[in-house]
Amino acid sequence: MPLTLALLGVSAPEVAAAGTPGAVVAAAPGAGGAGCGQGGARGVRPAKSAGSAKPVRSAKPAKKAAGSGCVVRGAVAGPRGERGLRGPRGPKGERGLAGTSEPCTDVDTVRGPGNYEFTAALRGGRVFLGHRTVTPTPGVYSWKDLTTRLNPGFPRSACGVALIREISTVRVKVLTTGGDLYETFCTHPATGPVVWTCPAGWTPLVRP
Image (cartoon, rainbow, N blue to C red; front, side, top):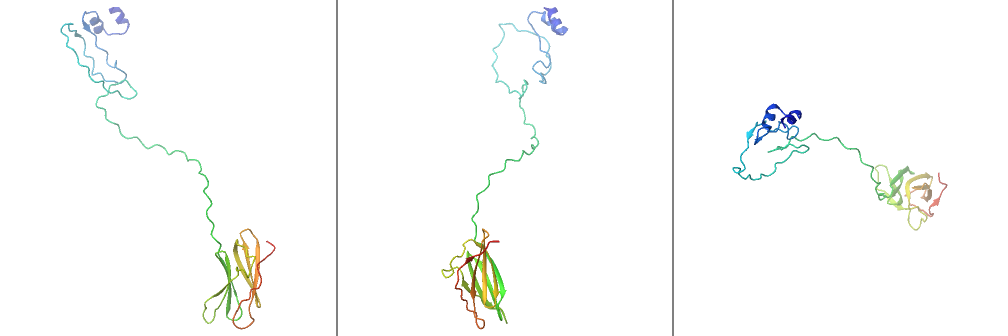
């Protein structure tokens, strides 16, 4: 038996203790697992007789450190680690729903005869032809709606307006969102106050 222990690397005192009846051999430091403190070897102590041994109360098992066989008593949480790196960008989201479209607005102005000014305005899907005096001070506009039943054929998708004056005739044009061009005209007296006469409806022109 001593020879066997010696071949296994047991120290000489432990070999001697192994040959002594009733002796207990202490485990070598570190035998409880790598890095676990055992408080040092206590050496060899004589064993108590079977009749004098007192019953031992079983203690609650101590917690073990994660990832090791070490017994940790009264462990304290370590410091908080550094913030991790930012993750990759997520996939592109789906396209949102189309919003509601608002009616187009536009305006155009030309100089009329004498001290008059003529203006065409597109607002709320309708076209108005207006006039006012500009001298000696700008006056108040008087408007005529060109989208009534007296002027049929007005395109509801009109999005731009323009006008041109030819002596006593004013031509008003609108451009639709689809690229179509329409025209109507109004006349006024050559002299005196401006009174509009708009006998025609809207005529489609050759689209640009």
